[in-house]
Length: 92
Image 1 (cartoon, rainbow, N blue to C red):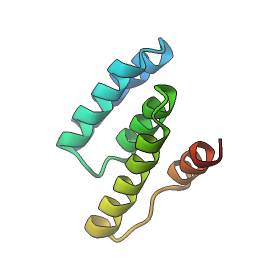
Image 2: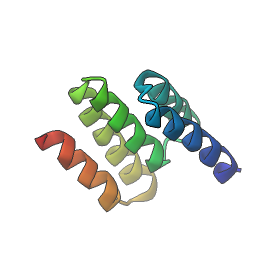
Image 3: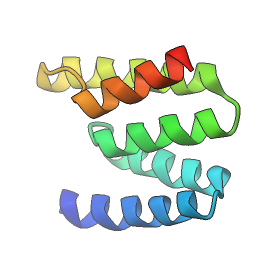
């Protein structure tokens, strides 16, 4: 069931990113996180959208939320892709 939800929501959000509709993309990613707060794809998308909307601090907060949820729930750290995105936003 999880994959049946994540795939379509992520596809819709990515489509809105391609059209640079960052507000709608962010809404998709946030809705996804309401349902599955361990879906790293949604955190990455929300980070990108916040950053594109000029909300750097919210993008960084989203990373920290992701890191916390993954650590508490799964005892893992964010993926290299999430870490790279975080570093890019943090230093750029």
